[in-house]
Length: 289
Image (cartoon, rainbow, N blue to C red; front, side):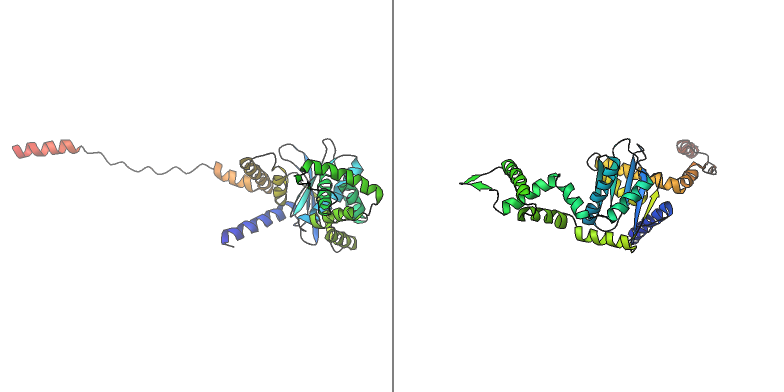
């Protein structure tokens, strides 16, 4: 890492510390309630440094809890260093509701909640088709003819309904849930995290900011990835960063310096111009005389 990279990392962490007064660690989850600088849309950003798979699992159970509390659809965006939660327009998630939802998740059996939630997802339908095909419960080819993916999907849906009626612990059904909960998500490590939260080994802190903190910029930009182009993403990031610097009083100082009038430069005395042609003509006349 060169000097420029070290300075950039230092400034990144220092801006977060100065702005939010907290930096998330492996022992502290920072939950930030903030607002979009353009639309004033509220966001709840969980700064949890436990990897994408754990964050995917944790975000789902928290979204389930908030959705049941407000009877509303809850949107989730996940990355490696946290996740973002949004509610429908007109729904304002309070500070108290966030804490109550987290405490409910900490003291609940998240396995059953996740299974009920996953069952209604497209991921469950796709994964079950793959597992059923590997188990030869549905066929990819029949008498030399290839069966289309769409037809395989229809057959797998009929099979899924039949399997659930016969036995909820049917092997291919259990394998589908295992793949989703342990391979796509990380249920064991999430349960360890919740256990440490119950014991107080890991803490969480809810804060509120009027504009997003530096650590939340990546999550917000990632959430806009499907909507805005790369150039717009860069401009959006610059706007978020400028709003942070403005709150810290850094932008005002730079603006004050730029507004200061520059000192007038001392005028240099211009030397009188001489006409070379007239001088040469005078010399020639003198020579002729």
